[in-house]
Amino acid sequence: MLQALMNLLSLCFRPFGQGSSSNSGKKFQSFAGISKEGKDGLLWYRDIGRYGSGEFSMAVVQANQVLEDQSQIESGPFGTFVGVYDGHGGPEAARFVCDHLFRHFQGLLCGYAPISAETQGVVTSETIQRAFCLTEEGFTNFVSELWSTRPQMATVGSCCLVGVICQQTLFVANLGDSRVVLGKKVGNTGGISAIQLSTEHNANLEAIRHELEDLHPNDSQIAVLKRGVWKVKGIIQVSRSIGDVYMKHARFNREPIDAKFRLPEPMDMPILSANPTILSHPLHPNDSFLVFASDGLWEQLSNEKVVDIVHSNPRAGSAKRLVKAALQEAARKRETRYSDLQKIDKKVRRHFHDDITVIVLFLNHDLISKGAVQTPPVSIRSALEH
Image (cartoon, rainbow, N blue to C red):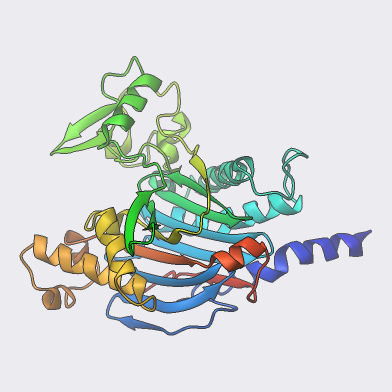
C-alpha cells in the first residue's frame, strides 16, 4: 500500500516540479526548453525556450532594494501553469506564493488535497480557486508563527496572476493589478488585436471602488484619495491579494505593526479579499500569443503597444524587448536618457519604475489540439535575488 502511494505521488509530482524550492536561489531554473539566458545590469532574461504548447520568452528587471516580483512556468502532463507574483511591502509573500501555489494546484489534481470528487484530476475554476485559498491559509499561518519575532510580516502581500492552459482552454485567475493580454490575429489581414483577459483589483478603477463601497456600505472611508491616488483605507491600492493579513484579520491590526498600517476603528470584517477573479477562454487558431506581466510593465506601456512590439519583432527576446521598451518610457517620463537610467542602482531605481516581470507564451495550436505534452517537462522559476 505504501509503495503504491509513493508511486502515485511520484507520477503526480516528479515530472514538472523538481527542485523548485531547494534550488530557488538560482537565477533561472529549467529542466527542458533550453535557451539563451543572460543579464544586462539589473535585467535578467531568457530569450526563447520551449514549453508544452509552444515557445516562451521571459524577462525580469529589478528596481527595489530586494526583488519583490516572482514568477514561474510549469509544463507537464496536466498542461501549462504560469504565475506572476508582484509582491509589496517586501519579497516574502511573493516568494511564499511561488513556493506553494503551484504545489497546491498540483496536489489538488493528484487528489493529495481535498476537493470535490467531480473535479479531482481535472483543471477547473474550482481547482484553481481552492489552490489560492490553501495558499492564503498557509501564509496566514506563517504570519501567525512569526508574529512574536517578525510582526511586520503581517503587512507583506502579493498580487497574484495565474494562467493555466489545459485541453484547448486557458484559465486566468487574478488578485491585484498584474495583467495578461492576448495577441489575436485579425482575419487574414496580418493585423493583430490586443485583448485583456484578466480583471484587475486596483482602487484607482471606479468599478473597484464601487465594489468596495457595496461590500462596506457603512464605511465612508473604504476608498480614500491621497495625493491623486485612490487607496483602500488610504493605505493600499489593491483590494485583493495574498497576504496583507493586517487588512483581513483584526488580531494582526494592532501593535507592534507600524502605526501607518493600524486602523483607528475596529475591524468587524475583512477589508481585503484573497478570492481571485477567474475566467476561462477557449483557445482559437487566431490566438497568437499571451503576455503575462506585473503592474510595472503596464504602468509604462498600453496593451496595444505591448502586443504590437511582440507581433512586429522576432519571437526570440520578446520579453526582454518589452522590458526595455518600458524602461525607455520610464526614462522619457522623467526626462532622463535610457543609458543614464541603466546606471542607476536598485532601490534608487524604484523612483523611476517598479520591478517588472514579463512572460510571453507563443501558442502552437497543433500541439494544443493534440492535448499532449510534446516536449520534456519544464519547470522554471525566476531569481530570488538579482
